[in-house]
Image (tube, rainbow, N blue to C red; front, side):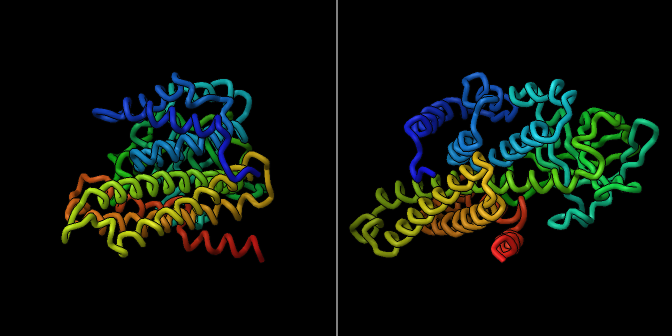
Length: 361
């Protein structure tokens, strides 16, 4: 694999950042942002996985909270590409890629987080349809979505597992999507509770086959870890730039605070970890594009390393900015809160340690 990005990819990141600095002004509409990225060819059906990772990293340098929106929608597109029937692909794939339809990923429940086998939302066969009842939490993009990819218990005699993935119209009768759950960080992307009461879903809206849910969920979470890493690296790049800019301009005791060894060490550590995290992320994206057997291990390593670095260095950036870093709407204050969230979703970093060890052992 290459350890440096090609000129094409370097230019892609630069052009995208210039475009975003003009377009990310005023009130942010996530659907409109996706559609603008599509219209300007930054998002395309022909994009490699790496290019979508670079897009996520670049956007998250400017606003890390957008990363969960991107992660969710890109991951759902991968689900449809990999597991959707021809009918589902023909109906929805182009609409999802263009942003005409926005998708939600709904897996987590009160008792089912890292252990997805504990899902209690239930789907019961009724002829050629299914009736779904249950409650989901932390459904990313819930309040802005058109389509929900939802996982429910469907175990019948002979099934491989008891969990199945369904594609559901968010406006369907029996679905109630609550207001976005207030959370510590990543506030740009809504996270919603969804209640389902006798929601009727046609058999043809099953993704894969009955019992494929665990396989689909785990493959999606693997991809999600990589996008989470890109989100963390974009954030880390942003806090490094803010820390450097402030430390050079801020004078105390007759000199720039960047002349003090303590500040220099903070900056040096940020830069080292940013480069290390980037190399690991790009190696992981390469593993995805080449179907490497190391993908599962690398995605956990990348997620764990980059999010831990983002959390540590966003805290240090607040320290460097001092009082300015404590202003709630400052970039580093928001990044500090965003970074903590990154250590938890797409599988906590403790779970990543278990995955890495299992893959090695």
